[in-house]
Length: 427
Image: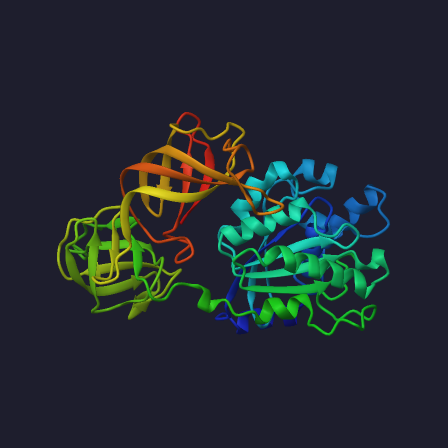
């Protein structure tokens, strides 16, 4: 990393943050793309580059294998595949980025769901030689279900198809036909060669027919601030702060992360499930008191009245409350080899609440390729996606997932093994 790059990063500490992940089938070039992006933006140190250069030479490879920057596990390096989610961070003068490199193998789909759960944008990798395949459809469907509004389809390995425009246009048409059935707001297409760096940071000289911008330009300029729900105020209480010191003898603060809406000093809020109301006396952060808190901010809220509030409660607006129900319908991505069964009991985590549930009914499974409902086979196994209903031991306060990703999601946990077996999106 050069001195000028470091200086730029320090000068611009208030830039927006973009979280994105890469998804695609095996050998589509996800790790290579991230490695090349880090290399071309001068976001790796010399000792890192020397280490992967030496490893590449020991393996007898002609070029420096930039994919090794994200493949940290020994099994990943030996097999040349991604198994676990790898996170990388880099900055440009315009923005800061957190990248999640997710696996392509079907048996690691659960890892892909983990890596994409907090992302704003998805990069779907497609091999130009093979076009749209089942894993492309699976990852796009999961991306849509998870509520990610921005997708960049990188059609990779254009160098292996002689940079032909007709190959790019054919794949784009196929993808648009499939994605038209999904609730995807923003889809963009870029022809690239991750190995050679075509259209990643600099425009490719091999594809003069492509009139769009580079991948880095799109990542730097894509607008994601409006993706958060700024209307429905939701503040799940995570922890009650009582210092019990002479200086803060009467301090009682409610810590958590704002899941929706804007909370301001002086606002009237209602506590769920009790229904009691009070006004916000102060909003504190690590850096001091602030006047308002927006989605994603971790804050401590102080109220004017002493109300019995504990972890799992939620602060909302008086005339804008979430649903409070025990019978819940959701789409579930199944993450465990032990199949889901009707009547099975699971522990659940929803925002800061813990509860238990029983599976009442499996309504249907989803055919990954056609998106049609499968109603004659309701056995949900590893990597299947289906629609189910559950009944919880206590009322949850939630919104639909489309309305709020934070209050509309939950996970199912096997109480015997403590494994997360399902990721649910409330309908």
